[in-house]
Length: 314
Image 1: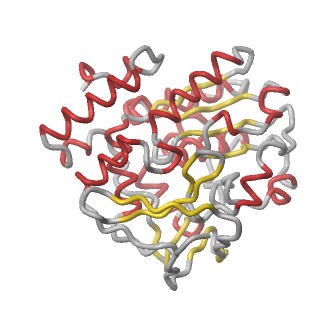
Image 2 (image 1 turned 90 degrees about the vertical axis):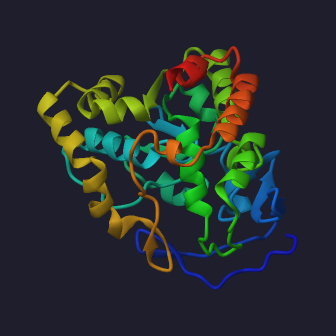
């Protein structure tokens, strides 16, 4: 597994302690320009967190989906927990906090996912090319989350910075981290590869119904965002319910309501940070912004997502 110095910290989710099993992992240490390191595992050419067991990752392709499953994937920090909460409330038909964390497919034992009642939301952060084969075979509905990659860069950095994960702590500056992010030497090989992979997946499988959930649109008009999700799920529109869910899923409410069920390190809940649009402006200097857009324009040119977050938009 390589040389990993394990920190003695407790990782838990929904109050349950999670063990870390490095067995079979191909460990990769990534150094930023100042020599500060992040630790990942390489699995089938993609960088993943060492929190994910190899045996779990190996089972994903053959996971048995159901025709009424919703497959929900999106790059980390693009509003996935928020969107899950909205979607689950809509399926439950009531604006009540979901009393558990979302079951991330890379982390949750698959026998537990198999026991969930229908309709299930199967959550993941992986690239869509790594999704269960049944997603396309059964034409399952897919929800894919989008967020300004500059805000995502800041949010991913804050997840890692000065946080004692079992496999190490990253203490690098944001500017140094940004260049790892732009190079794609971060989780999932970076957001741009994640998006291009999704784009190819949807082009190759146009029969798969997909809903793109924009973080910025949901901030601007949360009720309309919930209504759009409801329509995509094929539910009878209940505007009172949509308004109640939008209110219940506000950032300030969720930060409090989901605290008992959150992923925690030594009891610290760290998933919910600010829940705003444009925080990147507090982190990027002019040179960083120029370097960012140079890479964005190189990697996203011609993409269906390009215009949404092009330089002219912000």
